[in-house]
Length: 135
Image 1 (cartoon, rainbow, N blue to C red):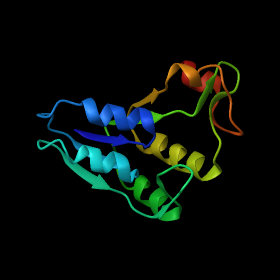
Image 2 (cartoon, one colour):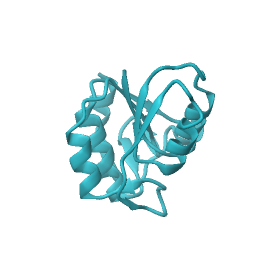
Image 3 (cartoon, helix red, strand yellow):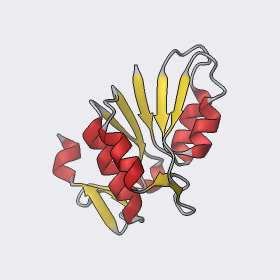
C-alpha cells in the first residue's frame, strides 16, 4: 500500500502512533513526518524534497507538484488548517494550497485530519468547497 501523508502536528502524531510492524510505503513532503516514519522498521519512507517552507514545515514548489502528479497513492492523510461548513477546507499559505490540491488529485482516497480547534474556522485560501468534501 502506498500512503501519502502531509505535514503538521496532527500527521506527526499519526506517524508517531502507527504500529511498528506496519508494512506500508509512505510518501511525504514533510521532513519532520519523514523522520518520525523512519522509526517504523517495517515501512519504507520516501521524502519528496524541494524548497522547505519555514511557515508550513513542508517542501513546496513546482518540483513537489510534478512529483505528486507521477504517483498514485492508495490513501492520502492530509492535515487541515481550517475546516468550515460554508468555506470548506482552507489554508493560510498559497503554496500549501497548491501542494494539497496536487495531493488530492493524485490520491485514490483522501482522509482530512483535524483537531477540534480547527473545526468551524477559515483561513485565507480555500481548496475544497463544502459541497465536495460533504459528498
